[in-house]
Amino acid sequence: MDVEVLSLEEEKETHFFKDLKYLSHFITRSFLIAVICFIVIFVLLFIIYCVDLFINTKNGNNKNPLFNAYVIVSPSMVPTIKINDAVVIKRIDGNYKIGDIVTFLSSDINYDGLTITHRIVDKGKTNGNKLFYTTKGDNNAVNDATPVFNEAIYGKVIFKIPKIGYIHSFLSKPSNFFLCILIPTTIIIIYDLLRIVKMMTRTEEII
Image (cartoon, rainbow, N blue to C red; front, side):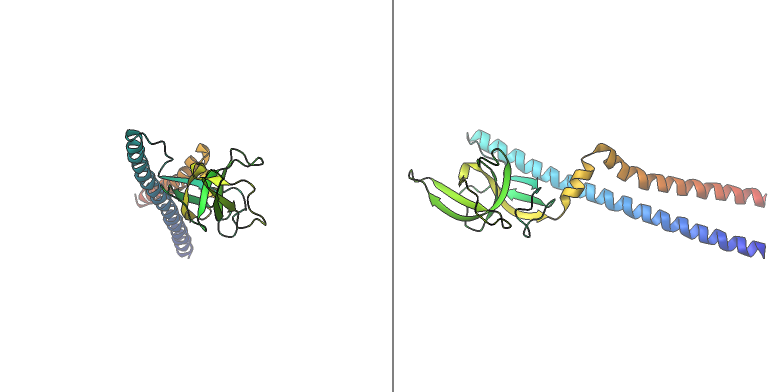
């Protein structure tokens, strides 16, 4: 009877560690796939960036990068873009349209030098016939006070990645990055060690 109870307990323990190992493998595999995808995308964007930079330098053009990405830190574009969403922008070699969401360097006295992502709601021309845009946050009650000129715009938002800012913020700390690798790896090692110990114990009992 004691043997049967012991066998059941051993079976439950084995199932528990198998489930634990499967979970740790799943977490590790998912994390590694995400990291690999991120690296592949980063490398592709870096190659495009280098090629674009080389062409512009060769032609004597001083342009912004063809693609770039920013993490949103204010609620001015809610609900279209929320805090900690990431936006990927593309440089437009030409004029922008009303309705485009653009990322630009602000010259507003309250936000001077800050990078802003807002929507173009109007456009016009100065007395010198220079094109400018009026921008506004979707969540703001009024338009931005300062007009935005083409040379201040980094690019148009082409898509967003929801909540990626949380991951970016967490993984930007080396300790957190290694922790994501260390915990699943430790679980797998502990499982394998316990399995080896159990096999050795059973071998000794048979002998």
